[in-house]
Length: 308
Image 1 (cartoon, helix red, strand yellow):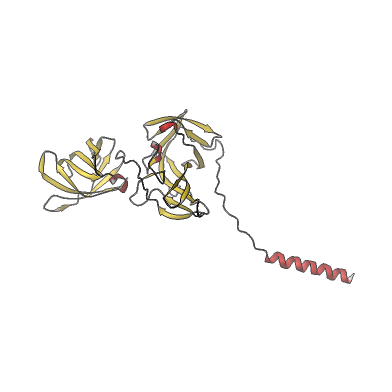
Image 2 (tube, rainbow, N blue to C red):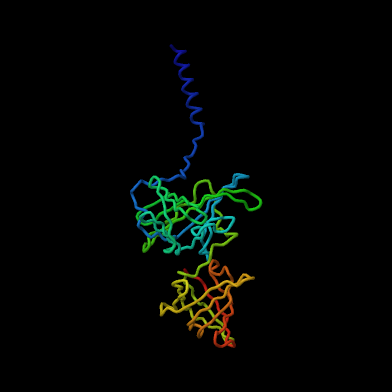
C-alpha cells in the first residue's frame, strides 16, 4: 500500500509540474461580425459616409496592413487601390457620399439609381453598374446611428507585389452625429496612416465648403475668412447669402481646370482662375491667379482651404 501511495504521489507531482509549464494561448479577437437580422433597419435611411478604411493583404510575403481613406486635408478617395474608379460608387467623399436603399432601388449621392437585391438581410448588392457590374455590400456593424460595411474586394499589383484588398466604409444616419463610430483596425493588420491613391477619386465641388483665407490684390494681403458653399454643380453661396453661378471645367492638354466664380464679391466681382485638377481632393488652393472677367487688368492671387 505504501508503494502504491508513493507511485500515486509521483503521478500527481508529474501532472502538476507539466500542467503549470504549459503556455496559455491568448484568445484572438474574431474579425467576422454578423448583424442580427431585422434588429436595425438598413433600408429607407439616408446614410452619410463619415469614415473609410482599406485592408490590404500582400500575397507574396504575407504582410497585412490597413490605411484610412480620409485624413488631414484628404476628403476624397478611390476604393480601387491600384487603378481608376471602375464605377461611380468607387469614388468616395467624406461627409458627401450618400447611400439609400429603398424598395429595391439603390440611390447614390441623391442622383444615381440602380436596382439591388438582398441576401440573408446582410448583403445588399446594387446591380447594373458600369458594364453590368455588381457590388456586394456586406453589413458588418450596425446600430441605431451608424452602419459599417465591407465592399469592393479586389486584386491588384503595385508593380512589385501582388495584393488582395477590401474596403470598410462607416456611415451615419443623415442628421445624426457620432464620435468614434469607425471600428478599430482589425486584428492582424498593421495600421499605416492615410492611403495616398495612385489614381484619385473623381473631383466634385458640389456639397463642399471652402474658406477664403487670403488674397493679394497687387498692393496688400487681405484676410477675408469668407466661406464659399458650393450647393450644386453650378451654384454657390458666400457666407450663406444668395446663390450665384459658377463653372468648373478641365483644360485639354494639362493638369489644370478653369474655375469661374460669378459674384465673387469677396475679392470684388466676377473672376476666373486656373486651379490644379486635384484641388478638391487635396483641399487647398494656393496662390491661384484669378482675373476679373470684365477687367483683365484686375488680377488677384487667392488662397482657399476646404473645410467640408
